[in-house]
Length: 205
Image (tube, rainbow, N blue to C red; front, top):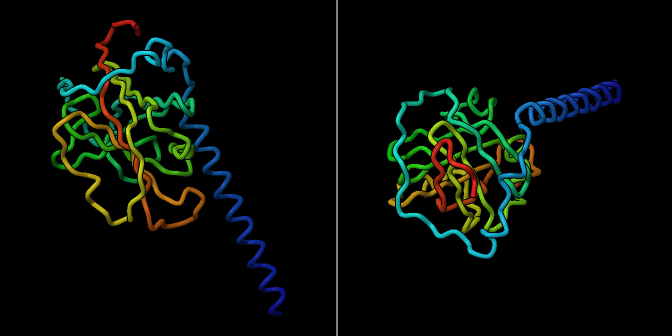
């Protein structure tokens, strides 16, 4: 009897894991949009790296929780994913979430913009991002290019990452370790500086 119960539990566990993996595979495919190579770093930018900007813009329209902000493009991993206002389960199921806390700003504005995403879906390849890579936000306000300048790991309850900043900074946050199931004890952080602003209608140089 015990062996039958144990066998049944193993089968159920296997099916559950298969279902979990299948769901996240579908969700990842569903969320990631078609990547365009025009967002890759140009030869000119490689020879003459863009310098950090001291100021950003100010968004003209208000964005509510659950609404689209635009797209996050990560050339290194050839990913383009939806960017949604809010970091609740509903928002993160739609794409990468934008932290709406006090003192935070939208990507492209002067200050600190913080984005969060699941390591199993939207930020599955976040570990491949390197120092010097570009992170790009595209929306109705323009195209905002950030340059990654550091990555580090913190404990899950560390709140020093989500704090106001004076210059335009974009931070990505996801759970860590990457291959771990369930609740994670740490967070993987990628921080970048705004280096380029393109207004709507401007051609990429």
